[in-house]
Image 1 (cartoon, rainbow over the protein chains, first blue to last red):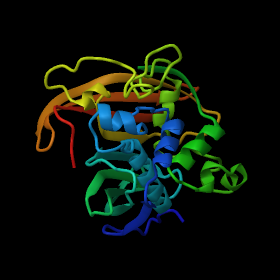
Image 2 (cartoon, rainbow over the protein chains, first blue to last red):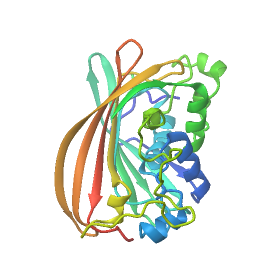
Image 3 (cartoon, helix red, strand yellow):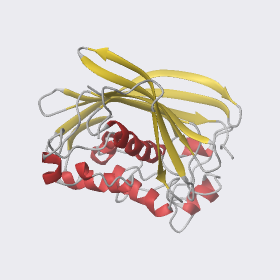
Length: 138
Length: 166
């Protein structure tokens, strides 16, 4: 069910967007998106050359998975804007929860729009990504 | 960067949706999609990022006959001296700091997009964990086969002085 025009400020929704993120899912995202940066999929390169503790997910994978929560909440084809800031790396094994809260409901060019504030958090309680979105709700 | 031709295909949308763990039938089932408000399969919101597949020179894709910086026999295929104070993040092309999409409409299979990227602002900030942070912005306009603006994407990349340890 898409978000209805009765939506009000403070309404919120959250979803676990990934449990125990696998290296294979990161590989899947590399293949689908075309971003083969070895820092995301190549343990030898990531640790020995780049100096990271292990590989880490593409920021865009976190944005994509958080987008799933968002479209589940607002409905398909309803987003007019979705933007994020990557705050912290996402590592294999992470479980992420994405949350959206309605910050404004307004009218623009005859359409009712909801503005949302987005936060994606890992299982240590650290924020890994923040963002904003706007969706047409009526 | 210019993407001359980015044909949007149902199989690519399916693969992309799978990679983000999204099982919504709107991304794979044309019969289901026809009965919805949207009316057809659409692409997930962040799908435009996979335009990299259609950039012939995209530097984060290995190409036949060219050295690749990922591991093979050695930990990296490219031997290159690091400049003083340069981080490995820089060697890997920097990190992604922000991404914003404005949707003028949602992309569907059969669309043929083109993308034109222009540089945006550049700025610097002092980071707690990473030393000096150097940000640079790019704006990409995706247009469809009729020249209509479909998605405006704004990306911000960051290069750091030091590897960010956690």
